Figure 1 (cartoon, rainbow, N blue to C red):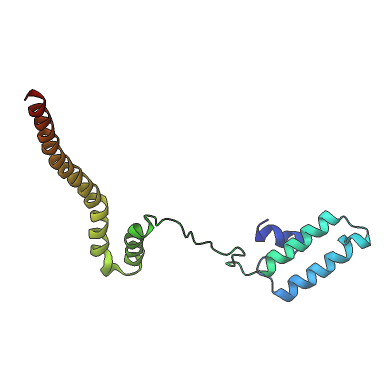
Figure 2 (figure 1 turned 180 degrees about the vertical axis):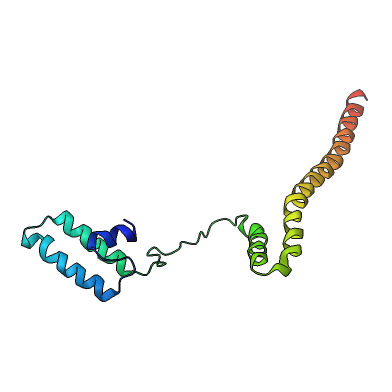
Length: 140
């Protein structure tokens, strides 16, 4: 249920004051309360609407759970994202943000390819030497 739905259910505007919300809730309670002949499901919806409107719009009722497991790649990406957001507010940071994103887009794949090639260049001669040594031992 959205804040707009809750306000429509209580018959008040979305930006109503807490006193106005409570007054509209009490007014509807007299009509929808199960003891007064109303249905309990409608009363529960009314109570939920009141709770939604009384909580601040940016309040998150569930606490954030921090994953204590293995480290992720988020720290690697957090700096480029933060500098990009800051460059929107502060234009003097735009060249720095561009350099950072160029490094992320070009530098990381380039480093991967370079390390892969270095690995191949180091492993191939070692494997060749091992094959030659094994062949020489076998032939002698």
